[in-house]
Length: 323
Ligand code: GLY
Image: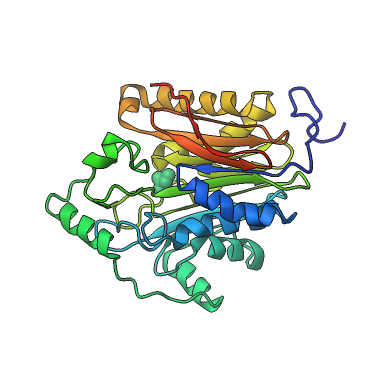
């Protein structure tokens, strides 16, 4: 029996139909970056790297070096990337490097390892020719940090990534002009050959404990790709995604025959079962793409959306939630 052809397996891939999806409204610009690769019959791997680099480059974004720092005032970045052959690489707590996603890819391609952290990740990046940036906080991040220091209170804010949410407006002033305030972008794509890849890049939670690492660089938690089945990325409170290997779980639900939306829903329901009454205080959402090119997502709380781009459409999709 061919791999993936057992009971519940997803049917044969539709090739020649590239598609890319990514989390939150920053995904629209990121998808355009990915589409430049996909529309020229480039690989899904190149597309998911190029796509999230758009977000990492944005000076007004909480992904990348413009992001809010940890509680000691350092911006520390996490990222991961995975291709259609289980090759994967990630970096965690990386400082002063503009494109963590490209360092993650270099870890995948040039080392025998999957994950490099902290000073070692930075040393590797510099050895690979990535410029070491000055490490100064951006103007907005500095203001937000000074504001935060007044109380030094750490409390995750639901949908902090969503500029339009009231939760965002109640958060420490990050971008007073109301521009978006995402701290994570996750992206999954299928190329014209039907191959899947995924990427995630984040500054993690603003004002986190020094050394805190979230789900994004943990393969199987923040992102996972199984080219026989599908690709998944997560956003929201990373600790609760790590606890149940979230993205891997969604892939396995799809392997059992669920649609992408059903699979994401099953995973967020599982987090709610684990968290019990504390689930009302957190947001976690998954986006998923299967081998047929079908997409879906689900969130714990209202307010999450994802961006989709393919040959026929380019738009935001409002996502259903449990609570
Ligand atoms: N989901 C991103 C983080 O928790 O760091």
